[in-house]
Length: 144
Image (cartoon, rainbow, N blue to C red; front, side, top):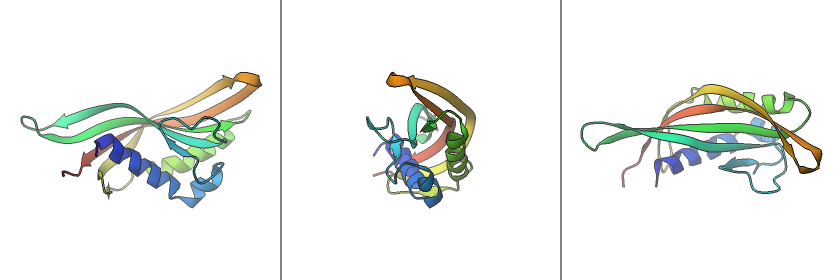
């Protein structure tokens, strides 16, 4: 499995495994790796890889991968209050998370590099507000 798939799995399991966060979302399945499914009920969380960088040792030895993910809470609201509350909980779960192994790899660290916030306008006058951050996640894959 790829290192990005290992990170995707960790993000999904970490966020959907927290009852407090799930209670703030439209449903228990309102966490999406990559894009949300079309027509998904808001609020939801998306986790999208922005870029990755391999950390190399001597020769061709790949020590780990450093990936940047944008994690966003997306709400249909006229204020940021709901998106901020969701991201506060997500940040609690992600920022400074302890080393964790899953079947695909080892998450070595996760820290928020920058906060983000925005407003998007959708057809029909729908205003969507989102809050989030860019998280730097370091991971090693499990060798087959």
